[in-house]
Length: 113
Length: 117
Image: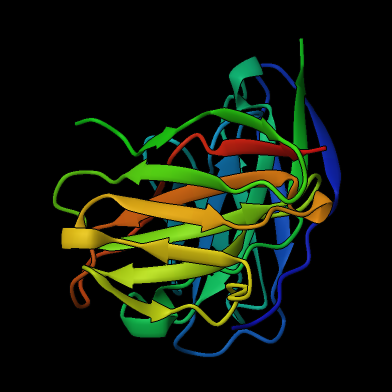
């Protein structure tokens, strides 16, 4: 699976949009971009995933560049409860060994009051 | 629906002692994972089960670690004997499994924090 690069930490003011970048310049055409987050003392939580098109759900939006070499996770109105480590993961698919998630070190997002 | 349940949440043992962790996945989830998470790092896969079959255990240190998933539901991860370096959080996750069409996202339990002294 392609390797991802994320900044180790970011701050965001409460109520503002949090934009978390991820670089995956070696991504292959059949690989998906997944985002998970891990709040302190909890297990990781699925946020969103995408292949080529931008995606939006009740938690966040995912913007993938046209060349697919980078993406941005957007939390439109960050709250204190969004403080967590955010992991960007590239995954080949959802069957067999591709089902595995390979986590990096992620980005520690701190939402400030 | 109930989430992934793990117990115990915390465990402190002396080195060379055995320890076991238990996981109950979400009902109907065929795939079960055990991950190890060291402080400040992301989780690392130890073993993946498809129903009762361990299909990926290449990262499991088999000299001291063992796992089982009898009847394809609950799972137990054991360490015997524990070493100081085994201090970490052990996470269990489950997913629906099957083939294609769905994101097959993994749902994680809260983890067991192991401290070996």
